[in-house]
Amino acid sequence: MENKVRVPIHLKLTLTIKEAAEYSNIGINKIDTLLKQPNCPFVLFVGTRKLVKRREFEEYIRRELII
Image (cartoon, rainbow, N blue to C red; front, side):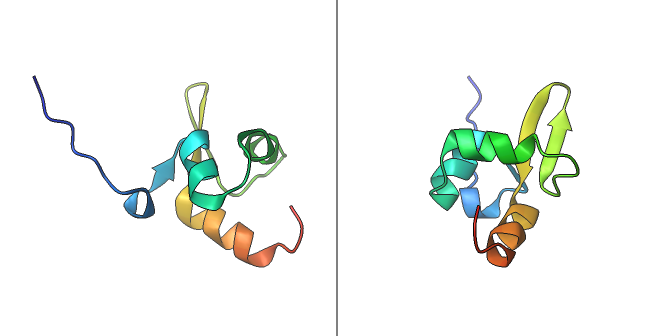
């Protein structure tokens, strides 16, 4: 059996919606809504799966006053 390497969330390039919610303390549904917005700067599609680009997500949160 392979040992899967666990990378800390703050070092990952991309996050799942659940990881992004835990990392930012923003709800899963709210993050999913943000990812559905046209030209969302932090969404990455892998097939039909949506991932969150961590650095861009952090920058978005820093810039916004209201989400």
